[in-house]
Image 1 (cartoon, rainbow, N blue to C red):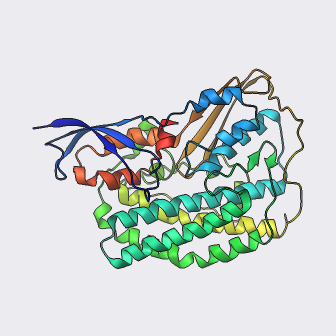
Image 2 (cartoon, rainbow, N blue to C red):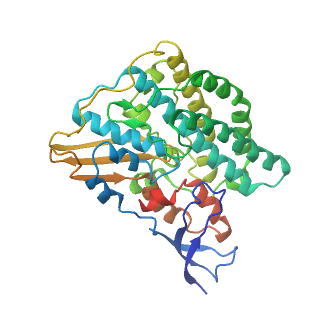
Image 3 (cartoon, helix red, strand yellow):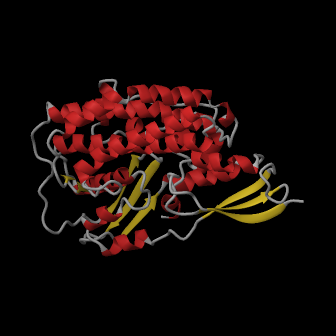
Length: 378
């Protein structure tokens, strides 16, 4: 007999979204046993909501950037970058070239760390052999080395708080670019291993499929959308920071799959990882060569006041599209600041994708949608 129940998925410490629970309302064909079929699913917005959009109204334009990277802790740099770009457009600020390349390097470093975490922990969840566990451990080790570079530049392993209106707060530490070049070069074999593993992961085929039409209807973005055949990638379609240069030299490429299932979503992650590492390496070469010297920020008055009006900015975060809608009354703080998060839209598509699947498929299906509890609740 069908039963309806709320599932509180308390995620373990190794799960990429494991800092908070994700709750789902499910109706199953039986009493919730692993072989039962899911007949209906509704993600629940849970208590990690902190009222950030209201908090922005009581902080000045420098302070809000420190709060802007809290909701999606796996895409933290992209979030603060998107808000800074929105402010700079409304202020008419031109960021110095060196700061632009530092931002680009950090954005792709953040993306590589994000993708390695989801790939590694999904492999660990499905590990059937010791070689699978070994590949997961390689992902963890690579992620730690990349996170060390993140910390060396920003001082934080999760929340960088590096961006400020007009540039970045601090310059690169000595030999940072050389360390990036060495590490990204050494990770090429791991990228090949990951793609080979995903291509052979037939147990993921057909799990939680999202059609291209459903992806459009639900507003899905990022790797989840590109796995459903939607080529949307703001780095190409509305390029910012140094992405136009990366496109011109052929370093940045668009990664798309078409099956729309869990396997396709992991294939997109595995395909994007070496692209991000190559973009990171190229950015480091620019910072060590043509842009080795130069200003890292524009000098601004102590009190930054955005002209009266409204503006919208968005970035291609590792999770998906992150958007900021800002209304200014000309004062030192936002009048309103609305946040668009990728996990919120992707979770809506999940509710449709798992219908008809076994309850046992739910953990892996959930991981393939790249949901972060804070990004979902914001």
